[in-house]
Length: 338
Ligand code: ISE
Image 1: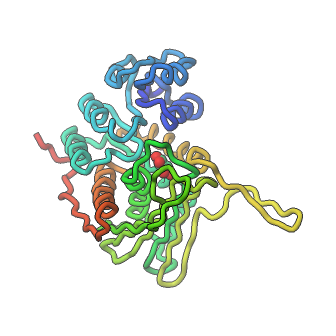
Image 2: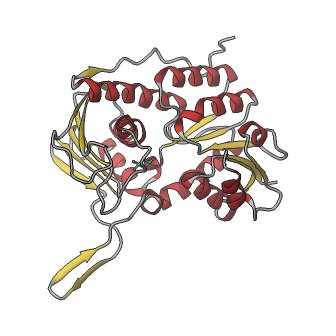
Image 3: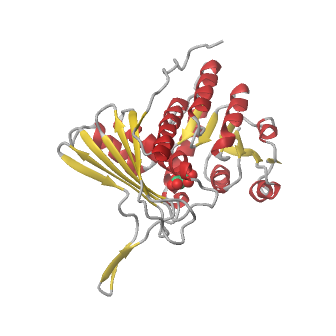
């Protein structure tokens, strides 16, 4: 029968994934939905046949017909859910970030290693975006020579009032940390954060945009503009500057018009639209992988590396200093730690 999935978290991302599993992903069904807000659970799970609707995430993991877990709760709730799912031997798709703190991420990596087989796929959806895949293929084929710089822009229409300055790194720039490591096949070794000193009038208190600069062990410099309350739309752009040329993605999408002496286009308003295809492909690939006993996309180790670089980034943001990144030794994914 279809793979029964328990979805933890019925917020914006969780609700979107429930819809995706329910309507688009062949071979899978939503078996349970959990969220601390009962009215959200009812709204998301109410019309799905045979779907348990609960407020306790552990009750969702233990509901009838659950074969795998999709975690879409806020980052700070991930560790408990991950450890409980690993304990039950359930395959997991975990939205980014795996967990915000490196110590917790390492606990998760070790708990997975103890299970003796890969169970965790982390939802860094850019890895499933067609443009990002083309850029990676181009860099791997070495057509432009060695990469020297990556210029990244990450712009949101607006963020919630609960968004903190640290979350600019742990929630937003986390994507560039993952995609830079993935595109380059290199580790990030140091972080620095710069920001304009003048506060913007009418701003929510977040001091943005900020410029986050990474150094890698391959000698590449990555600069990331993070703009949380841009007010005009959702943009994710990357330009690789290589020894013999450059390559850019994320510049333009879809419709372009020419009229009345002007040309124009559209800017996606949020990630659900901009990365809709990537999310679809990612979830189909995950359901497939679960059937074959494997994982897809970012691993728990990638999730740990993102958390380690994020922590250095938050310190750099706080102190204004260049902060080196120290990664723990990587455990053998198949080691038995018992
Ligand atoms: C959000 O959680 C995401 O993952 C989005 O892709 C990112 O653009 C946004 O800044 C985050 O808050």
